[in-house]
Image (tube, rainbow, N blue to C red):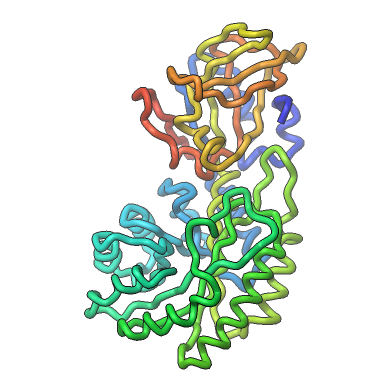
Length: 389
């Protein structure tokens, strides 16, 4: 991204994310707004769930709470008929506030401490993921529950998602059957298979390849006496930020066709959208708190930065659209965060009309992997949420 977007253009794009343009203009007109502020649209959550369900009707939606754990998002997902992919006792506690049946949750973290295992069991969770023998060994001490275990595997790919989630987790396809037999020895059940290509994937053929592997693995497992009841195809469905991505229906078409062709109807299919559900539902409002000229560029210091909402730039390799209502000649600019660390620099070489201290900037699509991965570095104020519909 090299240039900001004028607020008048925002209404003509998909960047609105559930925002009323009148609200946006009202925010820009305010002086002394208590920023940074995160605007959360519940209607945008529901719209994302419905879009994905329409594009991939075979798959049940299990929202990946890790992408944004705000209770309003969980409640809206559940109200829209969705369920949850959880990875910790904290995430379980959040989603249980919706009234969801804990027996229907999937605990997808392949590595769990005994304490996390116990807390999940106490909450009523029955379905867990493993990808290695050491994790299977942890199942042996659990004798008062018969657990449903999913084996997470990985496949070799020529292209990867922006965040490659096969790098850290997933056994090879050759390791699946031996792992399944180890699980059976613990007294628990091999309930199914799962994979996760990665986050912000624009290559549907990667899912197709992993589903083809699942087809072969299911045959191998059932030949050995295991009954497979579920295939979890993970998340990673792409969201447009500053670059276009495939339309979700176009993206999911080959995935859905492969599922229908290779995975028999009595095997449940679930998916784990995180970014696709939460990204567009949140918009950040930040204020200019400082200004200087350095080396031929205008530097603007904001009240939010890399160590807070913009942590997604580092951890998620993401750039967010920048919306301004300032007019005039565009100047070569830098946006920096409020901390005392030079690493806290957000955009270098951005073309912006001149801003003044107190002016606002809007950053759409900051709902996924932003606030959740921020910190309290420098003990500066973190942004507050405002649910707007």
